Image (cartoon, rainbow, N blue to C red; front, side, top):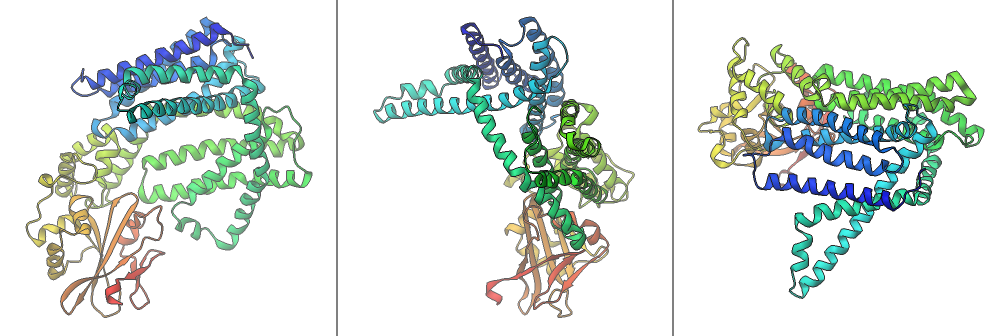
Length: 590
């Protein structure tokens, strides 16, 4: 590693200071409303370039020739300008752009994190050749250098706040006013962070020590992780796959296990120069886990294919498929290496890791272009499901299109607003028009709430199952009378509620279950029964899975086909397909 001197330290700090000044400029342009609204086509690439390029320069100054470094910085800035401009353009509703920009920021960070070690290694040599020892050193050292820099900067800021607070006790607010001014904290914190990066690079031995401790922890835990992976697969033939799919989050758990296995294996392999650790028996356990690890990839793909076939693509499912595919590239490669090389299989990890790193960069870039736009894929899939009748007009998630799929989702709603050649065209147009006029993602202000003037108006906000049945007029009157209560407010102001007509207490009379999913994480279900005094709220149904509460979305096909009923108990539980939803009786009725 090149020894850093005072000139390098000055240049690194100057780059950080310049970064802070550019962030300050963006802050002032937005604050002063230079444009009527901050145009994301300008500020998305601006922030991407101002954050990513200086950080890369801080890591490479002193170890890469200036000409090569400048060429690399220009190339990265050009790519980020194109990607940021496209992503900024895709945001159709600028008030609710956070999900799009979070996705952009995360993917750019991953691509940056993978690209910079490759650039450090290749540019330092003057040719695109990547000795794995250098790649390993650069990748891990970069990670821990930035952790140190963040800690250093955080402590620096905490001391400034202590300084300011002490003087405020004395009624002197000068220091607080200075430190909390953007004219101070943007350049100051950026320069201090850059200086901390310089310290991390100069005292690389400390970084290496921390790295070795952390990787040793991973290496010590790899046998346990391998055992967990093997025991889980061994249990599957006895339990079957049904319990796996019933959880609703099995795919994310299995994907987490795969990613941890990749991380821990690389912690053991490190730069490829050491001897294989562990006793022979432990090595065999780990090798068997590697051989069987692709089974997890297949299970994830199978689970995702079932979900996609039942519910179509969503942004989350596109990401799940992409991440599962990338993890599968590693695990299938490692398993192939174990079969091919046996004793020397770890030697094949180096070229495999470099090759998959290139794929990761390509995927992270592609998702921010029209080639692999996750929101566009989702819109095409969900529109097709609506137009061919796989999902009803009332059950379609218009709000998801409005507030989570950016410009392409809003353009699709405008198309639905003009729809004519569909059996439910009138209903679809009404929902699309109402959602396009909505400006609040979780409900509307009082003046914009839908008007419900009589009981029959509630039918626009309720989807009754089994299909082709009618509401009891007295039940609709009861819901109209309680329309100000939270559940009915959700049905009216948010997504329409599903209502199940089912006899839950075996009294030969129809009961009603009103189910609302106002947010992705919130589940509400109330049971209504006819009593001596009329219709009453007699109890609630609980979600079988707190991490995936939208029972109706998961069971849409069962409901549409009428595949639901009661399970025997004093008050019966609800069965949706093969899922049991327990009934909880109100205290006053026990």
